[in-house]
Length: 164
Image 1 (cartoon, rainbow, N blue to C red):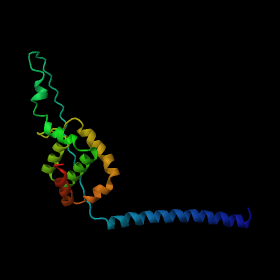
Image 2: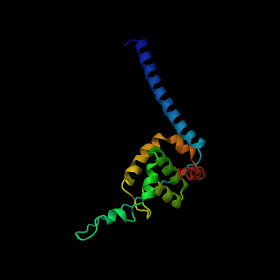
Image 3: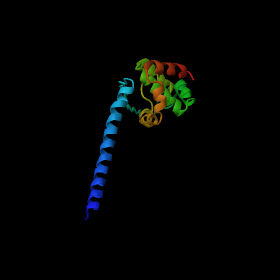
Image 4: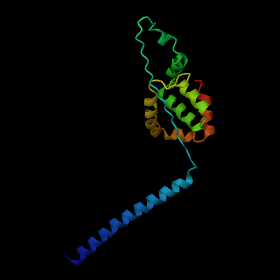
């Protein structure tokens, strides 16, 4: 190996090492600077899923089998009709905004509105799936989440759209 090849090899290695150092330094600077420019976002998402699966079967053949579908206090026809008028995107927006208010009464109103819980607060079928899908929705809708980034902005959004 001649002297020029050794110099080229040394410069190439130093160049690669230099690029790696610059990239790492940039990543560190970006991480710390992005934290200082953003507002203090101490968010705590607390999703309480209280899924009680009380399956009561009645083998008494003299009972009215239609009573559970017509007089069950767990069904809420108002909630199901209002939830069907909202798009999935609108449901996720209301759900996100309500959660950001940290107001449990408002959260319950929204959950009833979008059909995830009944009047007594018991989760309906599809609740867990909606919450699971919400994380994917949230990753795709960061700009909306940033637009309601305070409890006051989130509350204003919910109050404006709750009766849609």
